[in-house]
Picture 1 (tube, rainbow, N blue to C red):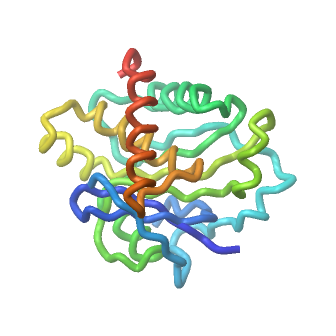
Picture 2 (picture 1 turned 135 degrees about the vertical axis):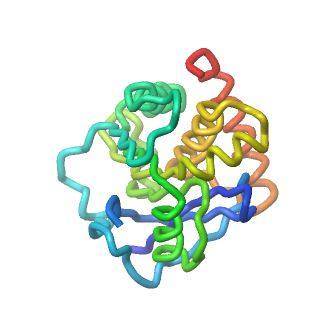
Length: 205
């Protein structure tokens, strides 16, 4: 099955989208490109989409490989859980990793052949047809965010880091649910979805 990786970066003004992603944990504001990775990351092997079928669905998890001042893993997990409920996927789960520029650069290079860091990359694991059944346990995939790039973007936009990371989380999550922004009409729909979700989440931010 093919892989897509989605990214959103104000710095590069491009975003990447990948369709089947595993978890390479070791190793800006957007439009979207679609790309097939030519090789796997040097980190842990990513499962193919079919590899997760029939397996126990992981719970939503947050890994802080790089700390973001003012943000705790419990806060981010609550943000993800609330977002999924608002979007109509109360039983779905995702994995979120906050890390640094070098990690995002390696992922961007290995999966999208773009050798530079970006702000967020999403790796969907669910098949498009899986999203039609919202009343079952479903692992949507993984989101990787660079805290370094998020800090730079927060300074540029003159807004709190927590707000910037929340925006990146929402952006990455929408990619896992099939949103894209390669074409102008897609970009309009995705930005509208981001705005609606961020308004709903405002009391948490």
